[in-house]
Image (cartoon, rainbow, N blue to C red; front, side, top):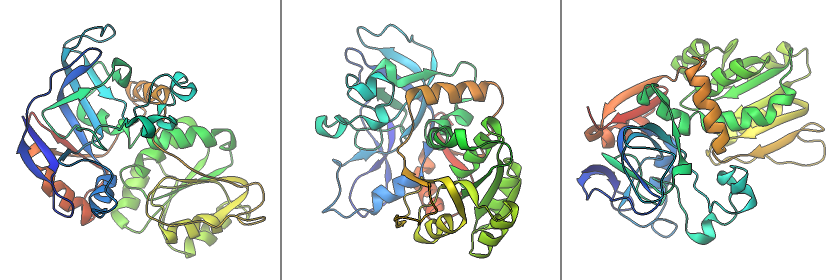
Length: 346
C-alpha cells in the first residue's frame, strides 16, 4: 500500500510502498477513506535527531476515518463495512482515567510505550490503518468521512476546552478565540453551538478573519495589541470571560493575559512555544490558566452527534494521498485555510 512517511530527521516526508498490516486479536483494519493533516506534524518534523522520540520510518497522520476492512478475533462492536473515525489518544484502557473515557490523560501510556497513530505508531496517511482496539473507533453512519475526519483532532481538542469553560460562558459573556485556522474556526462554531457567549476572533490574516466570520464569530479583529482595547470596550472594561489561544506563541499569550478578566479562563491549546507567567494578581484574580491534550472518547461521540445535527461545517481542502508531501509544504507556507484532508481513494 502507499503511505506518507517521515523517513529521516530533517528531510521532507515521502510517499512510499509498505506492507498492508493484518489485524490480530482485538484489532481492526480500516481502509482509509480520509486522513487529516495537522500543523503539529510540522512540529514533530522540526525536532532534532537528539530529541526525536519516535522510531523511523513513521507513517504520519493522527486524524483518520475509514471503512472496516477486517477484524481480528474477539471484536464484537464493529463489523466489516462500518464507516468510522478513529479516537487518537490511546491509553492503557485499565486505569481510572481510561475507565472514564479520558485516555488522553492516561498516566501509564508513556510508561507502557502506547502511542497514538501518526505520533509514534503507523498513522492514517496511508491506504490502510491498523487500530489497536474497537474502543478506539466511533461510528459515523452516513456522514461524509472527508468532512468528519477533522473532528478527531481539530474538533475534539477545541470541544474539550470549550466544555471545560462552558459554566462561565453565560449570556453576556465574551469568549475570545486567538487563531482562526484549522482548530480555531471549529472552536468558533462549537462556541456558537453550545454556549451563549459573544465570540470574538483574532487572527493576523485577513482571509482567516473572514473564515472566522463565516464560522459564526460576532467580531473578527487583527491579532494585535490594539485589539485588547476593543475587547475591553466590548466587555464594558471587564475583560474576556474565556480566551482560547489556538496559536500559543509568546505574542498571542501576551494578548490573552492582557484581555482576560477576573475569574476567567485562559486555555492554551496551540504549541507555539510561548509562556504565560502566573503569579498572585497576574493574570487577574481568579483566572484559571490551563493547557490541554486532545479530548475524551465521549467528547468525540458527542461531536459526531453535533455533526449529524448539522451544527458543524469544517472548512476542508481536499487532496490525494500522493500530494501529501506538497500539502506539508503548503501548510508550512501558511497556504492552507481550515483543514487539509488526504483522500487515498482519489
